[in-house]
Length: 302
Image (cartoon, rainbow, N blue to C red):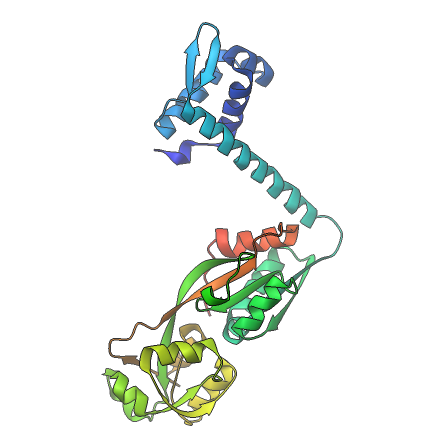
């Protein structure tokens, strides 16, 4: 199939031919020649590699594939029309607001990049965010206190029928130590060595803490801090080592202020999730934000 050849224009032509059951009547309605309409249909059939219409002296009738395409093309064209309505609404001279919720790391490092880009595109939309732990972020989405939630790690045990989620990308984590640490010159360490090392962790009820425990068992916790930024500062001040999302320490690693250490056999990645209520239609501002972070696949560079 050559889906890139399936244009909205061809779908609109097919939709009209399907409804009228006549190439000639459709051509008259479109102010086109019958030959041109026929060519568009043939191009569409070639692109989809399937027969859409059965021609006869009395007109045309759809095949089973033609009926399926008619149904889906209606959905596509209605969606395109709604996008136009929503984006036109954003250009009107009236206030719009978008509220986002996020876990601490995403709130401090991911959302500011998104907010800056979104306000370049839609300066008339005011935006705000709140930082909470994963469970509270999920509840804020379900209670409609925020338009979208952003979390790191699965939320399947918190999910219910009203919660929708989309994986934006997988985030790499890195074990970090200060430059004068004995591990700074080692290519890798074992999980057993990790368990013996003073470790700076999130709170006991945090999902990142539980995730690390599932990977490595009991760690030697020397401090509990409530954000990646505070954890990073504690490592810089040689209180202990830790494991953080790579985007939170990229600058320090590049400048040599922190050293990344590989843990033997460990797969340190977690999904970055966008959450929303599946049973609520998007507003114009929500539609525009969704398009930016999901459809444009905008990964961050910090």
